[in-house]
Length: 635
Image (cartoon, rainbow, N blue to C red; front, side):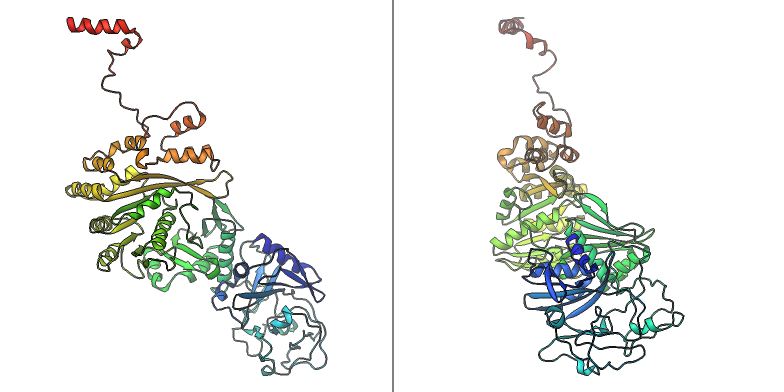
């Protein structure tokens, strides 16, 4: 976003007439009929599509083709920008021109080559040679070839609209379909928000007296403008897509995990776990106009009745987002979770490869746990991707909503969304058992009915993967059991004792440089020792098993945190904030003492033969202790 603003700021120079980008070429500005590069790096197609999205063109990218698309956007410090873009195959080219502010003009407006010269109150074209013209107005028609190539010849303007239509050798663009310009709003700065409306009025309106209401252009498809030149219009749904796309592009550009839009607050980005404000506060009307047009029609009744809704949003080059929209005291608020464009791997997430070994089981239960927002869904997606690439299984996923979209791989994968493709997790699980699945992925094990169906599926020859919001692996087992009434809990223990394959509990914490998040994982694979503790209702001994079970592939959370600190990936303070035993972890990392025998904060139980009577004997010599022993026997 900073580079884009720097490039577009070149339009403030008097000698610059336009800024142009094209696939495989360097960003350039046009000065005196020649293009000059403003950046030494050539842009790819994806770079240009991202640039156009940031400029409010997200809604045009899906249909962008050889026929140019055009829109307006207003950028603080630069002014109103006119954007024209076209695409042929993998080649994308676009040009941006700055629309000049309103000024006193004589009765005639000069035209650029191939455009129409207009006079106030006259619809016909001016005759004679055309003079040099200012940048294009919304009421003109422009040739993309004229703006992207160098042409010195000037042509007289045609006399009617039909004469200016596209020919076989030239692509023409009718700018009458663009959003109508509105009055400037310079008195209310809005740095992070873009205004797609122009800051000037057509020539016919400038020539009219100020007290008279402006007259629409001939064949103008939109309604008449406001009567007062200084009146501010409330943001409409047509204005907001570009503004929201720009905010989402800014969030992705800055590496944020979430974008929050709340009435009465500036846009907030969550970067490395911290909320960072960007720009000015948003009024309730603006937030409402930003959010409500994005709500799917099927969820509008739920939002009205329940006050919140969740859905996935896909915006072409900007990628996918998980969205929550809710009402609160001051209006509406929205949270946009940014979903990575590509499916991550366990290595890219910094997680141990041993997690992927659990995919070799043909049946059983794998649970990913951790607090909300700590990457459970991302890790689950990485595991599913392993199955998709390396096995020929039938995989069924049930999510609310679908976040990552899996490409076709070696496996056959079906992704179902709660509310769109099925009514609930329970119904989807029940139906999945009749669909010949090998792997069933449950987005969240949130209630007793869903957990019951998941356990049943894991017993009948299916590999079931799911997530839960629990703080540790041991607490996850307790939660799975406690969801059921006391009369069913023993049967649940027996089921888990034979079918639990893996529990992964993870935390995200800021990196050492504070620019991203790194993952620490607690790994508890299924084993005979673990199953015996579950069956015998001795889950309170699981921390002791984790301490001595490294040979079983067990990884404690504090051990994972210690490795991250030693590797310089995070700080000691960040690790201590999420550690299970902060004092022990700090002692290990600072070299003060070795870790305790148990990872929990309870003191270790004394050995049976370490009673008080034996304590004084510790200081005695060997013969004195032997004599005391024989004395006791003979006494």
